[in-house]
Image 1: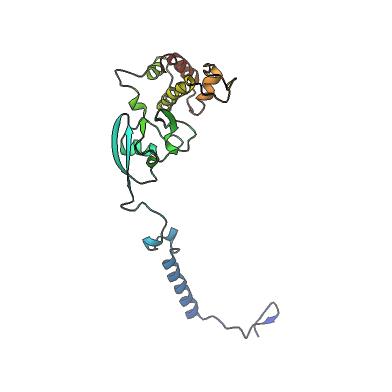
Image 2: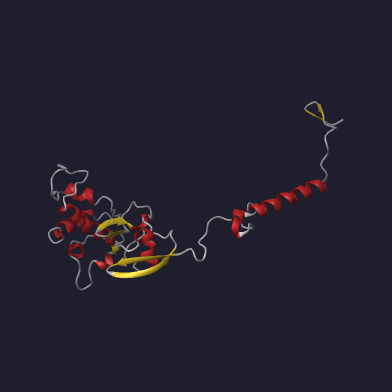
Length: 227
């Protein structure tokens, strides 16, 4: 008499080898249909897998970059940074953290600074974007670019395009009287460019080489030339 924990189990049906194999085959077949068989549903039909960029998913987007109008066909998930770098081949804007924390991807959108890695390209259809390539020319540098060269405001240079774009927009904000977290008087129409103000307003741009003293000197030098 077969027992389990003192209970008679003779009356229970005993599984056969054929039954076990048939049951396993049925389970595998059901898993294949539902897309759970194999690693990450590799054997599942395409219709049951996760979302993918299907042909024809791209939509028309028009970006005005550095004064030039570009008609693009983009997947709606493409960031503005990737549209600039991968589709327009404007690689001056850098992908640093890709999380909006380092500022290396800063560009000007209608004159205001944004982290292009956090913004989708389709959100800016018909809008004006300025990258580091659009600020000046090699033989006619923007005053901020010239100041960074003069004061050696960089080392590896990876963050420099974002630093310069951010600094240009920051001075525009300052001259417009926009306060910061360290402004002494929120009602003051024109904030002074103290070290505290400058560092606070540029705090979204990180230089891992720590060239901050030279960056501050460059921005101060250019502040009288950038409106």
